[in-house]
Length: 192
Image 1 (cartoon, one colour):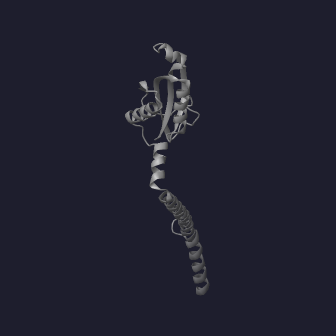
Image 2 (cartoon, one colour; image 1 turned 60 degrees about the vertical axis):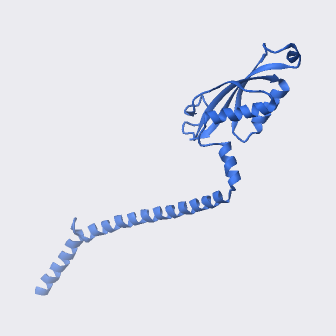
Image 3 (tube, one colour; image 1 turned 45 degrees about the vertical axis):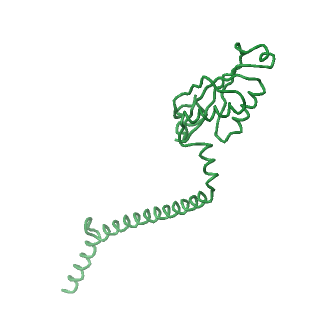
Protein backbone atom coordinates (compact mmCIF):
# COMPACT_ATOMS: atom_id res chain seq x y z
CA UNK A 1 0.00 0.00 0.00
CA UNK A 2 2.79 2.31 0.83
CA UNK A 3 4.25 1.71 -2.61
CA UNK A 4 0.96 2.59 -4.26
CA UNK A 5 0.60 5.85 -2.34
CA UNK A 6 4.23 6.69 -3.01
CA UNK A 7 3.77 6.02 -6.76
CA UNK A 8 0.60 8.13 -6.85
CA UNK A 9 2.43 10.98 -5.11
CA UNK A 10 5.26 10.81 -7.59
CA UNK A 11 2.83 10.80 -10.52
CA UNK A 12 0.96 13.75 -8.99
CA UNK A 13 4.20 15.65 -8.46
CA UNK A 14 5.25 15.00 -12.05
CA UNK A 15 1.89 16.23 -13.38
CA UNK A 16 2.07 19.23 -11.05
CA UNK A 17 5.57 20.10 -12.18
CA UNK A 18 4.50 19.88 -15.79
CA UNK A 19 1.44 22.10 -15.43
CA UNK A 20 2.62 24.66 -12.86
CA UNK A 21 2.25 28.05 -14.62
CA UNK A 22 5.43 29.75 -13.41
CA UNK A 23 7.91 26.95 -12.75
CA UNK A 24 6.50 24.06 -14.72
CA UNK A 25 8.04 22.36 -17.70
CA UNK A 26 5.44 23.94 -20.01
CA UNK A 27 6.52 27.43 -18.87
CA UNK A 28 10.17 26.53 -19.51
CA UNK A 29 9.18 25.14 -22.88
CA UNK A 30 7.57 28.50 -23.79
CA UNK A 31 10.76 30.27 -22.71
CA UNK A 32 12.80 27.96 -24.90
CA UNK A 33 10.52 28.64 -27.88
CA UNK A 34 10.90 32.43 -27.45
CA UNK A 35 14.68 32.12 -27.17
CA UNK A 36 14.72 29.95 -30.31
CA UNK A 37 12.66 32.60 -32.16
CA UNK A 38 15.15 35.28 -31.06
CA UNK A 39 18.05 33.10 -32.19
CA UNK A 40 16.39 32.73 -35.61
CA UNK A 41 15.96 36.53 -35.88
CA UNK A 42 19.62 37.04 -34.95
CA UNK A 43 20.68 34.47 -37.52
CA UNK A 44 18.62 36.27 -40.21
CA UNK A 45 20.12 39.61 -39.18
CA UNK A 46 23.60 38.10 -39.29
CA UNK A 47 22.96 36.72 -42.79
CA UNK A 48 21.67 40.12 -43.92
CA UNK A 49 24.74 41.81 -42.47
CA UNK A 50 26.99 39.37 -44.32
CA UNK A 51 25.13 40.04 -47.60
CA UNK A 52 25.41 43.81 -47.07
CA UNK A 53 29.12 43.52 -46.31
CA UNK A 54 29.59 41.48 -49.49
CA UNK A 55 27.69 44.06 -51.56
CA UNK A 56 29.72 46.86 -49.95
CA UNK A 57 32.95 45.07 -50.82
CA UNK A 58 31.81 44.52 -54.41
CA UNK A 59 30.84 48.18 -54.79
CA UNK A 60 34.12 49.28 -53.24
CA UNK A 61 36.01 47.10 -55.71
CA UNK A 62 34.02 48.54 -58.62
CA UNK A 63 34.64 52.09 -57.35
CA UNK A 64 38.37 51.42 -57.02
CA UNK A 65 38.47 50.21 -60.62
CA UNK A 66 37.31 53.64 -61.83
CA UNK A 67 40.28 55.76 -62.85
CA UNK A 68 40.95 59.09 -61.14
CA UNK A 69 40.27 60.92 -64.40
CA UNK A 70 36.85 59.28 -64.72
CA UNK A 71 36.06 60.11 -61.08
CA UNK A 72 36.93 63.73 -61.77
CA UNK A 73 34.64 63.72 -64.81
CA UNK A 74 31.81 62.25 -62.69
CA UNK A 75 32.24 65.03 -60.12
CA UNK A 76 32.13 67.58 -62.94
CA UNK A 77 29.00 65.96 -64.36
CA UNK A 78 27.06 65.98 -61.10
CA UNK A 79 28.93 67.73 -58.27
CA UNK A 80 28.00 67.42 -54.63
CA UNK A 81 27.62 71.21 -54.38
CA UNK A 82 27.45 74.25 -56.64
CA UNK A 83 29.89 77.13 -56.33
CA UNK A 84 28.01 80.00 -58.04
CA UNK A 85 31.15 82.05 -58.76
CA UNK A 86 33.02 79.11 -60.30
CA UNK A 87 29.93 78.21 -62.35
CA UNK A 88 29.65 81.78 -63.69
CA UNK A 89 33.35 81.75 -64.59
CA UNK A 90 32.90 78.45 -66.44
CA UNK A 91 29.97 79.87 -68.40
CA UNK A 92 31.92 83.06 -69.20
CA UNK A 93 34.82 80.93 -70.45
CA UNK A 94 32.50 79.04 -72.80
CA UNK A 95 30.97 82.31 -74.07
CA UNK A 96 34.36 83.98 -74.58
CA UNK A 97 35.64 81.06 -76.69
CA UNK A 98 32.74 81.55 -79.07
CA UNK A 99 32.88 85.35 -79.10
CA UNK A 100 29.65 85.83 -77.13
CA UNK A 101 30.58 87.37 -73.77
CA UNK A 102 28.11 86.73 -70.99
CA UNK A 103 26.59 89.79 -69.37
CA UNK A 104 23.96 90.35 -66.70
CA UNK A 105 24.52 87.03 -64.99
CA UNK A 106 21.87 86.23 -62.39
CA UNK A 107 21.41 83.10 -60.39
CA UNK A 108 18.93 81.82 -57.90
CA UNK A 109 20.03 80.49 -54.61
CA UNK A 110 20.81 76.83 -54.62
CA UNK A 111 17.61 74.98 -53.76
CA UNK A 112 16.56 71.47 -53.04
CA UNK A 113 13.86 69.99 -55.23
CA UNK A 114 10.84 69.54 -53.00
CA UNK A 115 7.72 69.71 -55.13
CA UNK A 116 6.47 68.37 -58.43
CA UNK A 117 6.27 71.85 -60.00
CA UNK A 118 10.05 72.14 -60.05
CA UNK A 119 10.63 68.76 -61.64
CA UNK A 120 8.99 65.47 -62.44
CA UNK A 121 10.44 63.80 -59.39
CA UNK A 122 9.29 62.60 -56.04
CA UNK A 123 9.62 64.63 -52.88
CA UNK A 124 12.60 62.62 -51.71
CA UNK A 125 14.88 63.52 -54.62
CA UNK A 126 18.57 63.32 -54.10
CA UNK A 127 19.57 66.45 -56.03
CA UNK A 128 19.10 70.20 -56.05
CA UNK A 129 18.68 72.74 -58.87
CA UNK A 130 20.81 75.82 -59.50
CA UNK A 131 19.09 78.29 -61.88
CA UNK A 132 21.36 80.59 -63.90
CA UNK A 133 20.29 83.36 -66.29
CA UNK A 134 22.46 85.53 -68.52
CA UNK A 135 22.34 87.82 -71.53
CA UNK A 136 24.62 87.73 -74.55
CA UNK A 137 24.73 89.19 -78.05
CA UNK A 138 25.81 87.72 -81.34
CA UNK A 139 24.78 86.01 -84.51
CA UNK A 140 22.43 83.06 -84.73
CA UNK A 141 25.33 80.80 -85.75
CA UNK A 142 27.34 81.83 -82.68
CA UNK A 143 24.33 81.24 -80.44
CA UNK A 144 23.84 77.81 -81.97
CA UNK A 145 27.51 77.06 -81.28
CA UNK A 146 27.13 78.28 -77.69
CA UNK A 147 24.13 76.02 -77.11
CA UNK A 148 26.01 73.11 -78.68
CA UNK A 149 28.94 73.77 -76.34
CA UNK A 150 26.60 73.72 -73.35
CA UNK A 151 25.01 70.53 -74.64
CA UNK A 152 28.39 68.83 -75.09
CA UNK A 153 29.89 69.97 -71.80
CA UNK A 154 30.58 67.48 -69.05
CA UNK A 155 28.32 69.31 -66.60
CA UNK A 156 24.66 68.29 -66.48
CA UNK A 157 22.83 71.40 -67.76
CA UNK A 158 19.29 71.94 -69.02
CA UNK A 159 18.60 75.07 -71.06
CA UNK A 160 15.07 75.95 -69.99
CA UNK A 161 14.46 79.06 -72.09
CA UNK A 162 16.08 81.25 -74.73
CA UNK A 163 14.54 84.64 -75.51
CA UNK A 164 15.66 86.27 -78.77
CA UNK A 165 15.28 90.01 -79.42
CA UNK A 166 16.78 92.20 -82.13
CA UNK A 167 19.81 93.99 -80.79
CA UNK A 168 19.03 97.68 -80.43
CA UNK A 169 22.60 98.80 -79.83
CA UNK A 170 24.10 97.01 -82.80
CA UNK A 171 25.54 98.87 -85.73
CA UNK A 172 24.02 98.59 -89.23
CA UNK A 173 26.73 96.13 -90.29
CA UNK A 174 25.97 93.92 -87.29
CA UNK A 175 22.20 94.05 -87.94
CA UNK A 176 22.69 92.91 -91.47
CA UNK A 177 24.89 90.10 -90.16
CA UNK A 178 22.06 88.54 -88.15
CA UNK A 179 22.88 90.16 -84.77
CA UNK A 180 20.54 89.45 -81.81
CA UNK A 181 20.38 89.74 -78.03
CA UNK A 182 19.76 86.43 -76.30
CA UNK A 183 18.48 85.96 -72.77
CA UNK A 184 19.27 82.39 -71.71
CA UNK A 185 18.01 80.57 -68.64
CA UNK A 186 19.42 77.20 -67.62
CA UNK A 187 19.43 74.75 -64.74
CA UNK A 188 22.44 72.98 -63.33
CA UNK A 189 22.10 70.08 -60.90
CA UNK A 190 23.97 68.98 -57.80
CA UNK A 191 23.80 66.04 -55.43
CA UNK A 192 22.50 66.56 -51.92
